[in-house]
Image 1 (cartoon, rainbow, N blue to C red):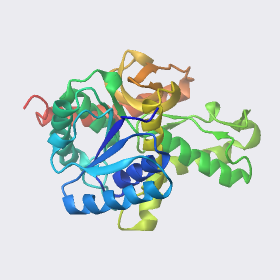
Image 2 (cartoon, helix red, strand yellow):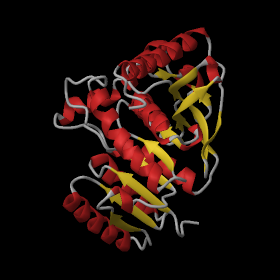
Image 3 (cartoon, rainbow, N blue to C red):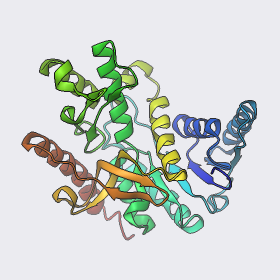
Length: 317
């Protein structure tokens, strides 16, 4: 199945490199191409990973694109390029810096890998996914943001910590934007199929929800010099695998809504079916009044960022 598949990764920092390493260990693609401004660093990492792949008898080769024009005919391209979120920096501060970087990267992908599915990881995630969609001209099914899988896994880890059991059997659901306005869904979260509300008190659930919202900041607070990368990278690799293997699995991902949930031309995290063509189907779950209000706030936060980009005449330059 993995023969001949190519995955491009733009940005070989902690997240991008860990995505590459994770995929190389799985052996699900034939070639991984790293693209980074620091070409020598990328070359070193590529050699190291190719050797690790050989150690586990994976046939994946990791190479380096010295220029965007080397990133050709990829099935999937992961974009992690951008300035990191440093302590004290809001996601909005990153907006203009990373929008410009994204615009440039996407132009290259659209030109050299026009059939690729693009997975955005750069922050602010939902806005960058929107920029990538507009700049690429791709169908919305081919431009997907990675956030929901990460947020769900954070929530699941916190549930497991709180319960003290159920590891590997916890399914946590999160919708909405990636950031302080995410919409954790305890009603759709289960432990071995048992509703979360049956095993935890409302107070305990509220505590988990709050910790999930600030899960990224909590890690930044400990690391001081950077942000999380193991869970973000693994979450991204899960999406890449689902696309390469055409699994049709359902995962929460950021996509541009066209009428779903009552929203248009805004990116938000919703459950989607992932397959060879990207986000092949959007699943509409029923939200109660409280959840609808949270989802509305989440979408309007992203809309504010899109409005800021429009006010700065970012599109159509």
